[in-house]
Image (cartoon, rainbow, N blue to C red):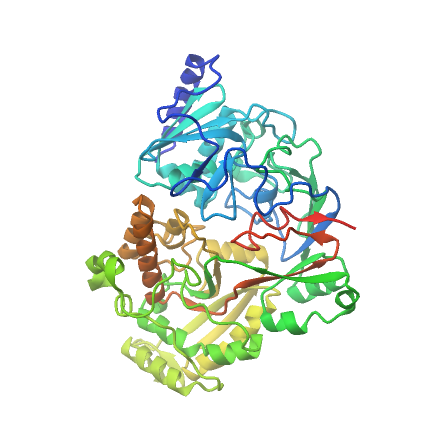
Length: 608
């Protein structure tokens, strides 16, 4: 979609605003406006709900939470590709037309918008803004701000926002507080994605280059928190806005209770953990099961000043591991990637790093009904994949399982299999080194963040196994800014990888695995995969109105991803572990997504 599109709909919006001037409600083709919308069926919460099911409506206000981070930041604009901004700003300082209930797979309820209406075929969606919605500077949130936000994000924003713009046919103002978005693609999720786009203040950027914002340009949002202070690379302080416009909304009741949220940056995890032990950081997320059992025997825990909380969840495992960049010629062959997976002796590494207490991730959507089923593909999953059978790597239809590995360090059987695959792919040993037919050695450039001691420990063990195959693996530790630049430019052979996946996967799957993003600067498809079957499964997920078809397509996509051998999976857990100051409390009822965006610090409170 070209930029002229937005100029055309701006002119249309101006005309429509005159036509509808004086109307208090938009004209709706699909009946009465609704308080919420679901991907399938109806939202779980009724129109008169009091609060989110995992929030405490009468939670007290006050106190502070200090969260640690490693590295640094050089921007406060989380909506553009340039610079590195604290990721928390997007969710604490800016709002969307609608908000999620994290106790449902995918339902939205009105936030900046008081109501939503959709066409029966989801070809358009219409929103009506709340009359009292305000930015943090007290100015009203207008339809013009909403349309401008869609425009600027769709043309100048981070690449993650561009796909929605390409699927938008028109945006039209239909009343003084309402607008309609019409889509050019059959995609049930687009109406929900529209409701989740961040809304910014148009006047702040009038006549300025949105992509060239500096560290001193703090985008103005409408959310409960505002940036109260910062020092580049060291800390950001957010304070609760006492004049926040939406504090009495049901979707907000019992949320955003803390007066202050501070993000402190440290050189590495070890320094940050010492700061937590000393009380300078008040919350710590622990992902290592062995460390959870052995690392928290210090004075503050023994005194009861630090509480150890475990939160169960029902979300998919997602994928954690080390991703391989298939844009690099020596990693483009699935046999080479399989060899690198075989060389990663999971039982030994897991036993050394986590005490063997955490199981391995077996697929991208495991731990949920969306995950692939072991063995050969059957039924509807097989039917969806068979048209692409000739181009799918081995294991997609037949069934793919990760190598079992060996509890001993040597792992001879898997290394023999790896060596055979490398030879089959055209590599040979010459003078103790693995070389191609021109004599060029096989090397791996492994990108890591400075201070990432956990992944460094894993890679050091892995590198020894690679040496036995004749592969030279170089570790490249860089700071946060350099890391973000290298990831955006796909300047790596291998790097740590994490993709959180939900119970309602949708258009973000195009960003993660879609061929259109391969090779694009800033792409989330960091492995560079270009697989027609993956694109087709995502299309089917997004176009079907059948829950059964959606599940089949997701299971088929899971097979394509696993058999593609793009990531070396490591460990997972079905519990979230949080150590926190005893004054920080949370409700007894937790959402099905557990400790994810929308829960901490959102529904937490401070109580002496």
